[in-house]
Length: 283
Image (cartoon, rainbow, N blue to C red; front, side, top):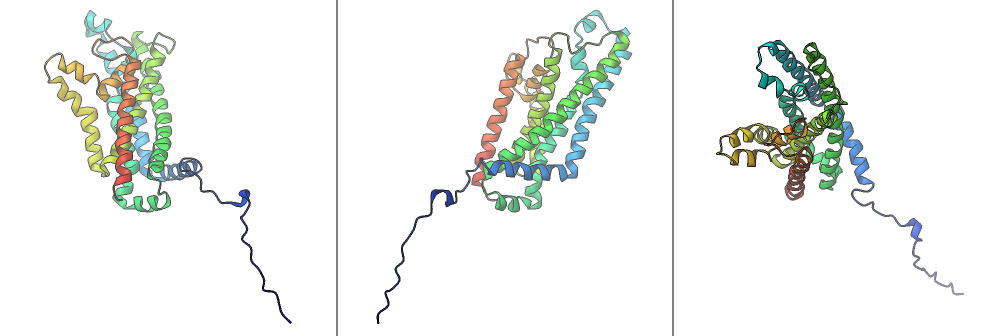
């Protein structure tokens, strides 16, 4: 008696049972964004930096408006005619940009300092996706806080200036555009700090570079002979911000639309360098 040997046949699983790996940036990006949101809202420095951004923007703006009202009676005609109430209420941005820029740098440089970046990159090996997720999460947070800060600063400043009947409203020409431009500028500086943090990878170095770009370079360009001082200076971030929230036209500044485009170019270049370096360097 003989037994037939069993035969085996290879079968191909149907298409609907084949496991497909999601593309980076498809299903991966939303998951990384949720992870980065959890991280950014659970870090104490985030709360303090955002609070500092708000407090500096509103507090200094109100202080500058109050000081102007106190010395208004001693100003000459030229100083009164060239006065811009909107810009006066937003002068706190000079220091607020540093607070939010430092927070942007801390979002990624703190992970390199503590070694957490190794765990993060193990969980998310797609490094550019990680950088994009950090930019999306921090950019959204920075935009919300910046817009709240500049609008509160504007309304508080105009209330102070109203004592001398100098206040303006959002319905006046170019005022709303200027206030929105101030909020966008703060967000751009924060994202620039994030890109510098990814490039430098050290908190102190990233903050020092941010100081140099935002505060030191404008001072150095002013020492250049004319017209180099204005031709170069108007393309620096600080002067771009002034153009974006300036109500009255200034021959030494770019137009608000052009300034926004140039500021976005700064961001594009910074994040391009950061994306290249984050994929080529070890954690």
